[in-house]
Length: 356
Ligand code: KG4
Ligand code: ZN
Image 1 (tube, rainbow, N blue to C red):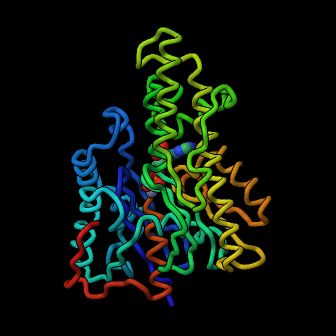
Image 2: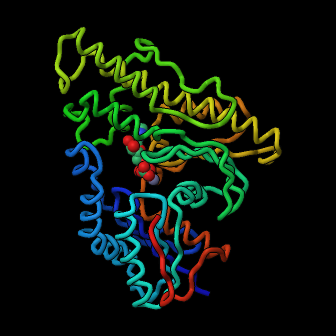
């Protein structure tokens, strides 16, 4: 019997992604269009701009993935598309494109939760059995959860304000790293990681937020305000205008990255202890998965590696390319759901779906 094939479509934020995977996890074709450059210039994502760029590129991205696979839409077993969470206007583009396609070719439709897709990507590359602990860190989210199966996640904690990627993006913007030619075309988080290599994290001492809270939630906005305050002070000390690059920018980048990493480590450590106590993870060989855009940060990975080692848990992270948004993770989640027989909408004509 021929393996089943799923087309995955991602448009939840600022990446238009498509990929075709077979049910063994083989990537047959993939394509990605990033809007990063445009949003870097405007200093953040403007939803109508993101929507227009998705609408302009979705057809060519899907066709590029299909032609790389040598397949026609008729050969697909299903179309899987991100329907939440994300920017409603962006999600709407992928959703209406997919619904048109499943109706035209009479294919089943699989609605995908973007964060679940980030969480399960690791199973495309490694044999990770359920349940496992997962830390999802991106520009929009910070979640600690136990993945119990393909469609069942127990959330242990999340950010009470902004996400770590969002904070790092804002700090990078405040430090004007975009004006540093070495950081051109980098996301804020990447620019912070790049600059941090040349800085001394000890030169600024930022407090780890919420360290006295006895739960697994996160907070990043207070830290960001503190960082902004320090930047302002340094600017007046150095007598420079906002927009020029501080001589200690690398130190602030290093200290910011370190403080974000320390908070992620502390909360994750707490979650591991909680899971062990409650028997939520296997007693031996438990796994911690870290995914989402911020998980591509090498320093954060190293700190989390130390935590997992000290807690006797193995750490797995997808490669950076699969940590940031892409079509492959959506197609893979579609395959997981197809295999498990959950969440598949068979009657394309009747599919009605609102992006959330
Ligand atoms: O998962 P993702 O591509 O999109 C969302 O779902 O948000 O994550 C994007 C976020 C951005 O905030 C970006 O600055 C951050 O991930 N990011 C990084 C790195 N690469 C991307 N943060 C820290 N270090 C990196 N190397
Ligand atoms: Zn994402």
